[in-house]
Length: 125
Image (tube, rainbow, N blue to C red):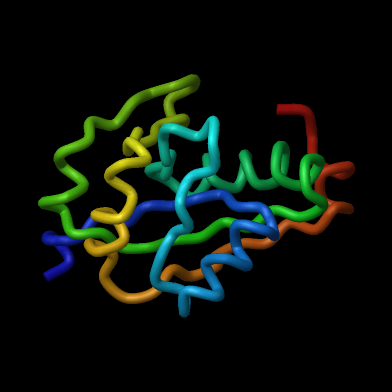
């Protein structure tokens, strides 16, 4: 069964996480104007880096979520390397987000949290 699923990670700020919670931890909210792509990442390390270094300064806290998606859906989107070897992500067009939500198996889970104090203590990346 696990071969049929892909684990995705998503860094999120408090506002996005609140919308996920309101969905019962089962759906990602629609993209905002100016957000044509949903970017889940392939590994927790990269998601933590974004949550700590971007979400915390931007919105006061950062969270890393993990969720499982049917491989048949995920395989439609190539993985893009956008920096170093661990900086890999899927680029899912906003118009496919509802279909992504339909292919989530189980719940979206918070796997790491970063309060504001963590960002100031983090080493330079």
